[in-house]
Amino acid sequence: MIVPSFSISSVERDTGLTKDVLRVWERRYGFPFPIRDANGERSYSSDQVERLRLIKRLMNQGHRPGKLIGLSIEVLMSIVPRSAITKQDKNELESKDIITLLDLIKQHASAGYKQAMQQQLARLGLQRFVQDIVAPLTVLIGRAWENGSLDVFEEHLFSEMTNRVMRMAIDALPDGNRWPRILLTTVSDEQHSLGLLMAESILALEGAECISLGNQLPLLEIGHAACAQHTDIVALSFSTAFPQRQIPGLLKELRNVLKPEVSLWTGGCGIAKLAKIDEILLLPSLDDIVTALAEWRVQHSNNMVLKEVVD
Ligand code: B12
Image 1 (tube, rainbow, N blue to C red):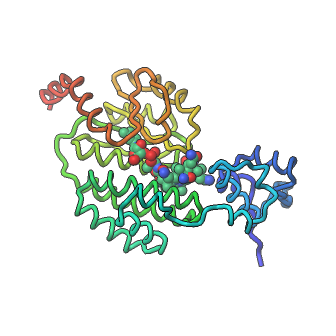
Image 2: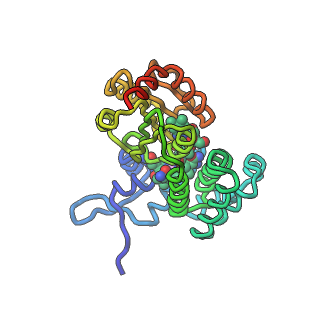
Image 3: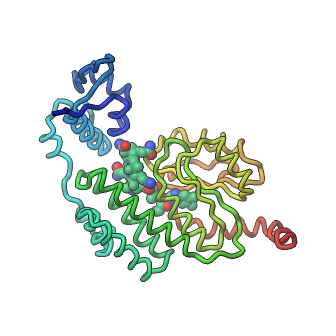
């Protein structure tokens, strides 16, 4: 039987613990204890990876690594809260519909989940569906994953199916004379794109032309795309998983790459605590989009008149 083993890069990717941290712990605590493969590279067993994932999860909840490293998988699992939905979640999110959707994900009922999402969409309309169902459900999924009651593959199932339902809803919106042209993407290393899709739904409903380039685009490529696509606005999203201290520098670099007449907007929980940055619009919540768009249109109304004359 082949025993699964993992390279240090896979362990870094899967656990969120950097290679440096893994090497330091190995020296300092004697855990993890990878064997060496035929090329002399570190090779970790699945048990060690599982333990590391639990340790990282508990660290995200404020536990100190030194206190966790000597503990077995069983003990670590007993510390991780197991209930998917706490009383606080129930009160905060208050919606049976959202809990039903989470349960469908936990039962791996992808067809049932898709159908239930489409029913909610038909009932509420796209804007309320995004704000009242998708946004809180995303928070609940994040908590369930954090407290260990949802597996990574279940989180992926949620992302994939939610993406599909929202993309279909956006594509079904009527074409027409849409303005402004908004390019949506995330920077390298930011894999979270559901926030951007939520923003796109609202922008598209408000009559903007959205050009979605998916996630993880290098800064220079964003600049090239903005030129090639004649975009009026570039909109980015940062989740809380993105290192916050890197964001202001990245945004300033991108500001210099873009033509001065192209506006730069950024949203997502990751920017909630950022201080104001010149010539960059910070939009931490979905509620800010409609006002931001209306203000942009007032400021650029002359361009619209010109565009109509040219058309
Ligand atoms: C789905 C998901 C994933 C999926 C993403 C798939 C995809 N296509 O998006 C995958 C599995 C890839 C993933 C990976 C990881 N994830 Co993740 N993920 C999530 C989850 C459940 C939702 C992610 C999401 O899209 N959030 C972003 C949006 C929806 O939320 P938001 O930032 O609050 O944005 C709101 C508004 O600000 C607005 N908005 C967002 N963007 C924009 C943009 C504009 C222009 C505007 C106007 C508005 C706007 O819309 C949202 C609506 O309320 C969250 C839970 C959560 N609460 O977010 C965890 C979460 C973000 N992930 C987390 C972690 C730790 C990771 C990993 C590091 C895990 C790992 N060990 O590998 C990696 C990091 C990958 C990377 N390098 O980016 C943590 C971050 C914790 C932290 N503070 O560090 C979270 C919070 C889960 C948790 N509770 O622990 N993840």
